[in-house]
Image (cartoon, rainbow over all chains, first blue to last red; front, side, top):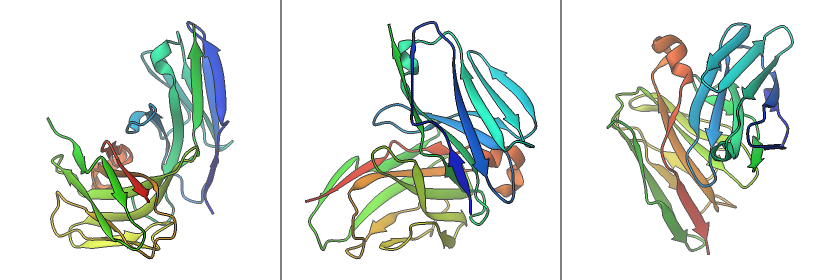
Length: 111
Length: 117
């Protein structure tokens, strides 16, 4: 079956750099996505990696290694507003374009 | 602005009652999805639809039903058969499979929080 593993919690201070890891298990791979969700809000798309390597979008970067079934989200110059849950996701093996999500990593940024 | 509208935002239900959650999108997306989120949990797929008049069960479909009569609408009914319906329900949409990598970008509604009394 499919599964994604990510740490449940990460803490950091403002201005720091934090890395959220994600390992996945899936039979058909169509890329790794990352979503951000603030408490009580809707998840929003952050990034998508289909090929190995690093994708950079402003303060956020995402990395993928298909051979290791591993990826990470890197958040730089942390701000208080980055406190949220972060989910990695892969395309479902059996549900068309639906995504299967990890359980999420709660990031707490303190001053 | 294009987006997804879910209603109601909060809903209370007595045991044994069916309730329907509304989801409407104006993004012209082919695919729509319903996810359930419990505290400290990820999103679990309830139902999905790739095209009008067609939908498929996800991982936790028992006790739920859907319809897709229009491209824009994908309502979810939580039936009395759902043993533990108290949860946060999220509707999402995406371009269809023909959109290439764009199909991996889901747009979510603001969610509906259902509480069973």
